[in-house]
Image (spheres, rainbow, N blue to C red):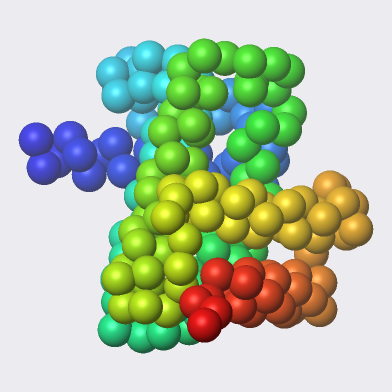
Amino acid sequence: MIVADKKREQIIDGAIKRFIHFGIGKTTMNDIAEDLSVSKPSLYYYFPDKKHLILGVIEKVFNDFFELIKKKHNPDLPVQEILFNTIDVRNTFFQKYYMLRITEGIPDLLNDEVIKGKLHTLKESEKDFFAEIFSQAKAKGEIEHDDTTHVAELYLESLMGLCTMCIMETGKDLFPDKKSLNKMTVKQKNLTSIFVRGLRCTD
């Protein structure tokens, strides 16, 4: 089982490298098999088709993201500092996997129910993580709001909106330079400061 899991991880890592370099749409299962020097039957044993391989890639990226974000999480810090730290982790992954662009190059990928379901589940997991952050902040008296799940949803979608603006300003075919990424990070942290200030108790 350990060997099988390791082989599966090797295939996913190889797929990520090729997807980033050539794009998902231009990559075939044969390309990945050749890159890794594995037989096609062996590849299809782990991933019966390209869609399942894409799902494996999505899970890998998000699992690594959640593992790091939880590792960096320190509930004893002020809520604003906690959110700043999560922004730094999110943007590290944004920079690392930007060229992956899961939804580009394959028509109707987002209309696939399995893919949509997986992306929705992962987004909900991140929303739950932020809801827990805001719930802990409320318990410590740092903020005052009854519906921390709604707060988390608004906050996460605001971060995603600023990320989308960065992509639009840069151009989808260009990798955002360090200046653009820093600008996005500053805007997200400014938004966070305003957001937290608006949630604070007022006597």
